[in-house]
Length: 177
Ligand code: AMP
Image (tube, rainbow, N blue to C red):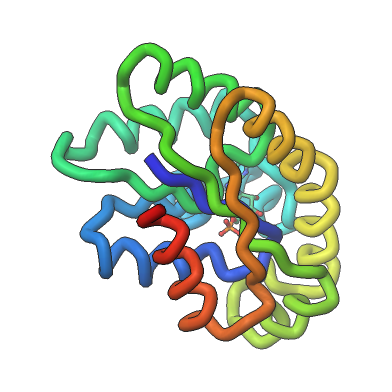
């Protein structure tokens, strides 16, 4: 399993699709999965840019992983985003369910990606929700990068303030080393 991490707008979705097509990976995009699964209050929270409850997310991701045929590498876009989610994932890896190979951290500053987000047509790409997602990232996900390193996962920083093709080439280079 390979993880893709980074703030909203850093290009996780774009890079996930490019990589999955090039390398024949199963791609789990947590945001897409949640847009399929959740309604009501949960959906409102998503649209406001808040993270959803860990247990709920873990339950969903567990079902998605179970539903995949056991015939290829899994690329995760947007999971884990918190330490409890990562604890669960590492526990599953230790239990032999899959190998946790690498985490790519798409590094970009808020200012650099905000315009990209405002240019998309997603309902949660409004200024207030964007800021909320940036704040959630700093609060919950940024500390996770160090936690993963401390727990033996290789975290590779990729400069994501470049064209999708340049970022993709860099990831591929690092994937093969
Ligand atoms: P994304 O498409 O990855 O930007 O995710 C869209 C939204 O889905 C986020 O702003 C969160 O509300 C929710 N979400 C996605 N992944 C997670 C996760 N791992 N934990 C909690 N909430 C998540």
